[in-house]
Length: 201
Image 1 (cartoon, rainbow, N blue to C red):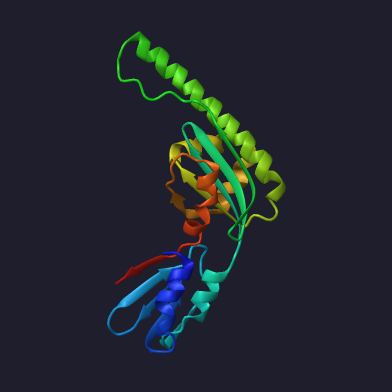
Image 2: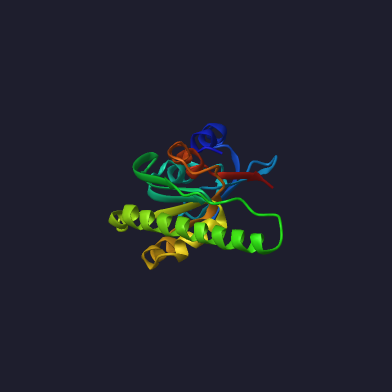
């Protein structure tokens, strides 16, 4: 749920009787009629237990902005960007043709497979080079990294260049399933990037 929507949904509960527990990056809000669990996208440093509904530490965490790098890759294209808060401040997109899967057997199938593997490598190398070029100057400022698209394609890109080793250490747990990575898709990412997980117990 979008961070502003979380605030709108929960703000009326502030100060009511109940129990609020901040622990391990999650807040549990027990109002007596049920328990809401909220996990902010970039963690929650505050810890504590309260005998009322106490939401200001949660709202502070949801309101915080960060410098986040995004690497979105699918077979056929990639998009790399840097967000300062929700503003896209640097980006590059690219595409490389990759054939669809071949369903027939025999020699032609083997030739097709080798050709397709070569196309996948060319895409991974191009995306890795673009990612290294774009994110290199931001390395000291990037606080988190978000990956999305196709997991295997992203892994191929990360494995294609040792210059990208630092990205994994700053990655957030959520993987963003997105359509073909294009500039428009990248520009729309902040809503999901800053969305919180909200569930009931």
